[in-house]
Image (cartoon, rainbow, N blue to C red; front, side):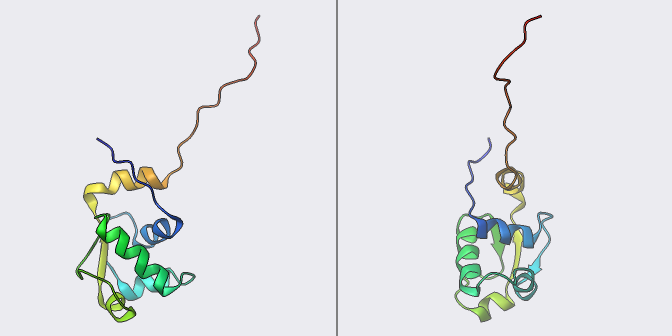
Length: 102
């Protein structure tokens, strides 16, 4: 059964930077990929993604830039499909407003 996942813009940016392949990304590389985001915003978003078990880390809690730089992260493969679905906007079926009768 699919989860109902709600992601913020920061969450989506982090997930895209980590990649949805399941491979590990170091904290320094992640910070470089997210160059436009504030460090505090990265730490907050990562902390919430880890608490929701969407992202896994070798460090239990990320509290500072030093913790972030030495940690390694990867997307939890158990929820990968649900995360992809949450990141992709659903196509709405367009119904015609008028129908011609012939």
